[in-house]
Amino acid sequence: MKSGTIIKGIGGFYYVKTDIGIIECRARGKFRNEAKVPTVGDFVDIDIDENGCGTVKSIKKRKNFFVRPPISNIDTLVLVAAVKNPNPDFVFIDKMLIIAQCNNVDVVLCVNKSDLCDAEAADKICEIYEKANCKTIVTSTLSNVGIDELKSLINKKVTAFAGFSGVGKSSILKRLTGFDLQTGDISKKLNRGKHTTRCVELLEYSDGSYLADTPGFSMLDLPKIPSENLWEYYPEFFDYTNGCKFLNCRHINERECGIKQAVDAGKISPTRYESYRLFYENLKQKENEYGAR
Image (tube, rainbow, N blue to C red; front, side):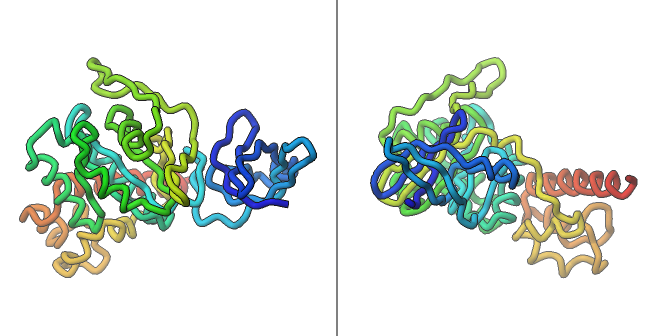
């Protein structure tokens, strides 16, 4: 019996890194009955036969788990957004911050392609999310800006990268690891990149440090949060709730709302508040649909 980490899974095969090397494994049939499938990032116990092939026997308790993309036991999530080409999608960033909080994952917001604009444009994005207690870093793979700082933030951790195609995830991973990862050109028509990552895979770039290029995070839905509790996932809101007239203020249509007043005064970013309104309405709609059944 050996223990190890699944670093890649494809076509029913799982590649498990152990202290004697990477072992190609199949999973025991019992996992199908338990509705639990081995996932990249899982810590597992395996048996190895005389031919050097392995069988996944058990999956150890997970720190966290994502269904799509299938990955577990993440320490840090690096959200990559380009300053331009493509323009930053603030709704996506805000959604991923909430998902990370629900899964106890640290977040680093990587504002990439800083070489395409002046410093002020990147700093404005960072300022929005520093108020939300999110670690931010400005990077450029062309000039190598911020890459060493990013390395220090993810050292000895399992780090997943997320962001729309074209923002520079694969280029950053190449800078960090030296691996010749496939990168795609930007579609001029759609201002979005072509999908280049084929599967989830952990890349060990130093002892105990793993990176994952993770396609599919953009398709994740919000967790099942009660709509009245959504504001708690916006850290910059806390300082202004004492200005709300009503104790059960939802910060949507109420008069004398401290949150809305802070937005009007420029103390809370309008993009953050608009994502809050959007998410609140989505959650409320789902609650009403569920209650009508």
